[in-house]
Length: 448
Image (cartoon, rainbow, N blue to C red):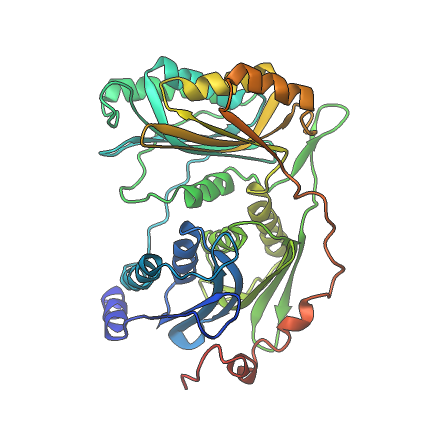
């Protein structure tokens, strides 16, 4: 009855989406007003992120059962969003998303090989201990089994690796549905993931239908795999905890009975999405917040409670939140050399490329694989086996082996500049809960 009543309230108060290109000189302002529900902030941010829009500022308020958010966005080139098709899509899709039921969280797949056939492709989810050559071995197995990779995302973090890979049969170009063949794929990939030292047993799990957001799923897989527990090897070869990372503080605000989270880190694409995704999956609700990005830096401040209505109550929980947010920031950080492969797609292409990387002692830290219209466009972030930058002679050798005009090289400059000193932008976010502050910025009206 409670669920049906919540649906009725949402339909009696349909969401309102306003897109304004006149009020701000350098960004498009998107305002979303709706009945509040858990996960709605993630839904909105996910829509904007999937359109490759850059959120430069955000103001969040969701007290009293009403959700009122304002986003300043640009395209990838820093321009306002003026494409009428994109504007119409945002308005229609956000209204549809906010009227839908709360999404169902997927079950834990820690240390697993998950397989999910659909009409277009078979989705394979992998997680395990990271090691040099792991992706090459996975791709070789898939090629030998006549599975063509049509798109994939691979992340590594804190000695763990996760991947969501979509494959089709190389003959029919359709999803693989034969149970015996799926069992063989699972068995062989499980053996690859186990390696020599990882004793975790891979399991086959069918994910619920309709869940398609690959990056959201990667966050969940790595969270379930506890990649937020930082480790390093000691001289004796043992593993010990290692805590370091972006500047994150978590403290209790007694005046309003919220837990306050502040984060300062280097800015990068999809950072806001990654943070909101992690907080949502940890069952926290953002009631108020501000996001501001400057030159190569980002500041985020959130006032949260758990879904049960309580703030963070223990030191252990506070430390866990900090570790999980650090992991969310670091998972997608671009490390090393960026290599972009553009060529005709074929069975075994990914296996051949990753084999060349392995033979030249490169480690793949992150990868985005895509195909469209028979063309493959793959992006790899690589380092040498020690985690250091790749030498130019190695780059030249790889380009020669891959073939002319197929591999494009871009050096990643994101590790060069130092973040400003603490407090350089914090003055922007004082008195967040004073209603006159948000109203004076003309971001929201009074709903009381």
